[in-house]
Length: 167
Image (cartoon, rainbow, N blue to C red; front, side, top):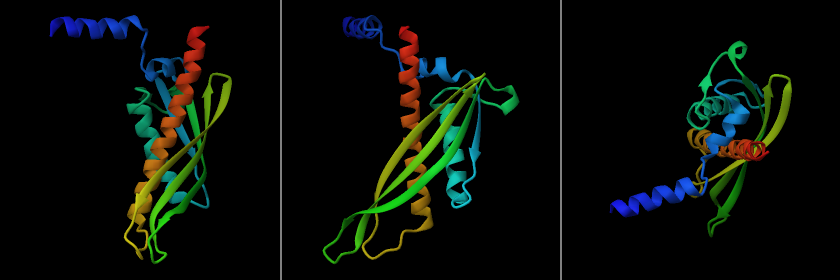
C-alpha cells in the first residue's frame, strides 16, 4: 500500500499538475469585490446571481470578498439574458423538461487593466406534465445555470492565468 501511495504522489508532483485556482490567482488576486448591474427587466434573477457570484469568489477562487476600495480585483457582473426553453414533450404535447440558460458579462478590473468575459451556463430540469413551472423551481434552475456560468468564467480565467504562467 505504501509503494502505491508514493507512486501516486510522485505521478502528480512529477507531471506538473496544478489546480485551476493556482492559475486564476495570477489574474484574480486575494481581495476581490463584486458589483452587479441590476437588470431593470429581471431584478429578482439579478439578486440570485449576485449571491451565486459572491459564493463562488469565496469557494472557487479562494479569495476574500472585500469592499471595492480595499480590493485588488473588482468584478462587474451584468445579467445579459435568462431564457427558459422547453426540451421535451410527453405524448399529449405537454412540456415535461425545460432548459434554463443564463448569459453573463463579467468585467474584471485590476489596476488599470479591464477585461470582459462572456460566460454561459445551462441547467435542465423536469416537471410534471401539464404543470406550471413554480417560482421556486425557476429560481433554482437560474441559480444552477448561474453557477455553471461562473464555472465557465473560472475556466476562462484559469486558462488565461496558465498562459501568463508559461511566459
